[in-house]
Image (cartoon, rainbow, N blue to C red; front, side):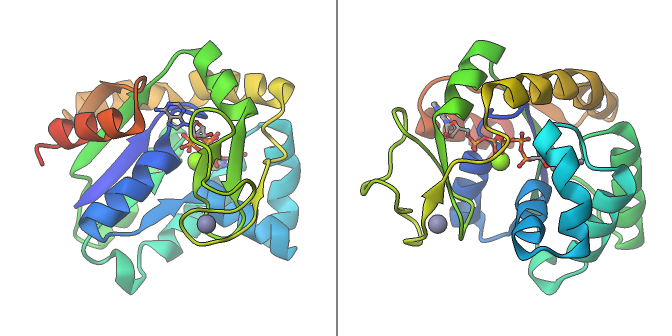
Amino acid sequence: MDFILLGPPGAGKGTQAKLMIDKWAIPQISTGDILRAAVREGTPLGVEAKDFMDRGELVPDRVVIGIIAERLKKKDAAAGFILDGFPRTIPQAEALQEILDELNRGIDHVVSIEVDDEELVTRLTGRRMCKECGESFHAVFNPSAKEGVCDRCGGDLYQRDDDKEETIRQRLAVYSRQTQPLIAYYEKKGKVRRIDGTGSIEDIFKRILDAVGK
Ligand code: AP5
Ligand code: MG
Ligand code: ZN
């Protein structure tokens, strides 16, 4: 099963991907998580990506397409994957199609999670994220059992550098300009299911299961 999770910053892509991993035992592939790990490790990729990420802009297509081309060839993705935060532009979607064609596979489901901007800002300003596994918590809506510690893996929680209100607004603008057109792109292919991303995390997961017929 090959999935794409679409949705604006804070829609819950990462949160829902973790539930999907548990259910289907296929990996979450988050370009954001891969880029943040590269920034932390100070690799050339991280050095190139950091300024774009701090400004709330997209990292150049060629960089993220290269990451995905490598990642999708790994063994653990053979039975399926959940793409979280990729593709984000039409050229990325076209490149993905070529990569998948070469691997003789295709996207089965595109789920677009929809939440309005003010709710997204509230979610992101209160987010706490795990340094180790990328799990998202929220100081008020979804707190970890022990403050500052990840429920899933025991890693330390932190606030992302791009979760400042000004940067969040920029990310939302970038989403509507560069990523939202992908909904129409995949609608033309008859693949998209749009779901309401508000309500409890469990309810949204049920909507995803319904949308993909599981
Ligand atoms: P990325 O890491 O992908 O960030 P994003 O798209 O901005 O999305 P987020 O991770 O912020 O949100 P999410 O939907 O995962 O929400 P979450 O589940 O955490 O990208 C970061 C940057 O990397 C980009 O700006 C760009 O620079 C670069 N980049 C990445 N991919 C790229 C690409 N393909 N091309 C170019 N550049 C790329 O939830 C958010 C919060 O809400 C949490 O606190 C959570 O606990 C809470 N929450 C979740 N569900 C609910 C609910 N139902 N009710 C209440 N609160 C909830
Ligand atoms: Mg995320
Ligand atoms: Zn963790």
